[in-house]
Image (cartoon, rainbow, N blue to C red; front, side):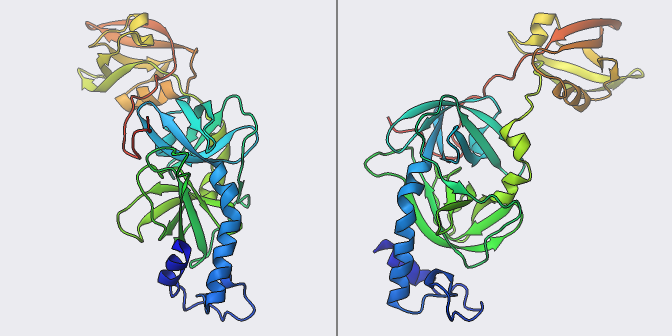
Length: 331
């Protein structure tokens, strides 16, 4: 009944499209009869079981979001703001209640993110759009699935029906109702293929945004196998006095690689590996090009005396839990 109501409410969205003769009911600009509505409902119901099974809850510390499993080896698509820092520990909760340890992979500016289940076993999966540039058409019927508030086995994944109202290479916009906790969940076409991932949620019915699959494909290698940057463990500001340019350390974190190597607050770093550091961003860039375990030779000024310190870089610690994209997981 829900689907029939939704279909009736949105039936006139694409009235300007081509004539509907000989089209399947879900391909027409608008349903023309009760038979069309029932056919669309049947089409949706046919793809729901597999779609809901592959939609998962992602738990990170005290927060949760959604995702969708797309491969037997445990690759999960989600939003970048849900997966967070590469290497972050994630718990993936399936619709049947099973839990798997996982880690965050990469994320990008389009808000695409990936997570990898570490020891996958008998996973339900969804098909996804593999064409690198294919976008849905405005007016196309779509189904959003997610786990707002975390997985509830009695309720199952929450499903909403809508239509595409805007599409560009990285971003889709639909009138599918989304809720906090849906972030990272899948947007399906009526064939059960993932065509997008929920990204920005709005209280307005027509302002819900999704990362398109081209937004994933354009950066797939970096998302699935990100290069983990080295971690120094300092906060620095620009320094430019007495003909000296560099990055002045304002914070040296406890137990960080910088602390262990003997760096101190007030040190002015002028080179990394012989390359000039003229501002704090140069320090960030040069350290970011190195990997955990790499040795970085730092040239610095301390009490106006030049010295060199070698630091063995580490990995950035996991970010503290935060709740911008969903609700705390259910207890």
